[in-house]
Amino acid sequence: MFLSYYGDHPGRYGVLADRYEARRGMKFPNLWAWRRQDPAIFEPYEAVLVLDDDLALSAGEIAELFRLRARHDLWVLQPAFAARGKVSWDVTRQRPWCELRFTNFVENGAPLFAADRLWTFLDDYDGSLMGFGVDYWFLASMDAPAHPTRVAVIDSVVTRNPTNRDKGGTREVDATQTPQERVDQWEWIRDQRGIPTYLPATVGRIRRPVRAQITATIVASPDLAYWAYDRLLGRSRRRAVRHGIYRRLRPLRKRWPFRILRP
Image (cartoon, rainbow, N blue to C red; front, side, top):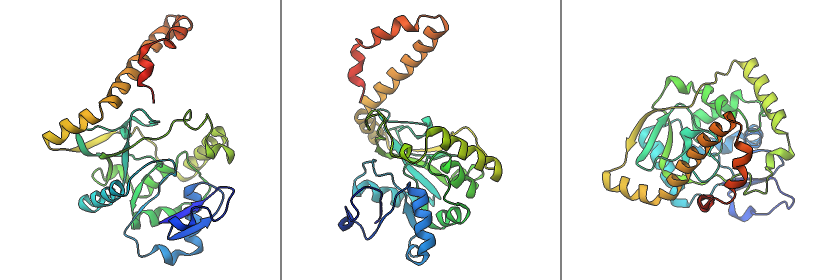
């Protein structure tokens, strides 16, 4: 395990890692700088998981991601996200009846790369983009939309992506760049390099066996209920805004019993 520590106590967690560095910054710039400094230590690896530190995955779940990557010869994949966490792109939300879905997109929170595809991306990457848009950049480096069976979201391995509220309303990346600065940086790089953007979509799926579908759907039922509630609330809110009554509905929402579904 390679661990890049950005906190205030250098050496902390060092005993957990095979390779350790103390470096401020975000994970992709740090990985890029680490590989430039000592490329030889990365060469033996066939696949690399570039994981945020706030995503909980067991050793068995991580091993399953690596196993599925090898079985299906995937270039990049990610675990599915639980609906009760932060889901920036709906294509990454878990569908519990599937083992995996082939997609044209994975986001940058927990991508697992075939090593040669990651090295190709890092050779093109310059360390300037910290988070927003990095996913479109690494997908463009492997021409992912033209290879629809090489990119996947793994529904049989699910993790909850903490919301901003879980983090007290702040994100670590905001200490380095404001959200608007990240957007501006991404738009400049996208235009300079001609990186294509597109609507993330599922292009194929492998379903679980029927019994496993039923079991997984039961286990995921709180997430499915929350997702259905959130969709219904979103539609109701849009209608209320159109009719100018949202201000009157908002106080009522605080007393709705459905808040028990919130994480």
